[in-house]
Length: 169
Image (cartoon, rainbow, N blue to C red):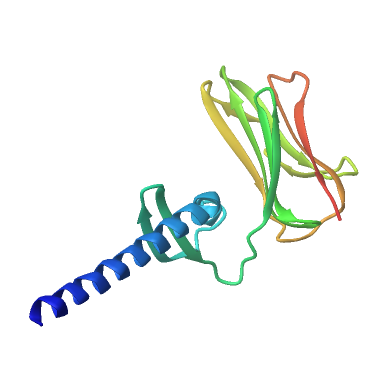
């Protein structure tokens, strides 16, 4: 009777272990596609709090809580050494980034322009040390005009190079 009782108990423990393992594996599989979306970056989600972390064979799933912040969609692209990114949903924009890599040293200027061509952010002339990437940020946290928003950069008074992202309704 003891042997049967122990065998039954071992079977239940093994079954529970298999169920937990299957659940964690499923969580890892489901989470694998969204784990990177839940991981905050220091610049856009510094207030995020880690709620849960699960290690699986596929990697680590992290669940974060953000205080009243809606996780925005992201769009962006690069044109040469100028990359422009917009974080938002429809016309609501939290942040825009003009990230420009300067391969050589020289006087530089970086801008972010709205769809009407008006400059909303400008670094003004500054000395860019070669081999470095500089980032100009615009953080309206509001609805903005629909259309093409652009990041432009130049060096040593040359032509501006830019990349644009469409912000749509």
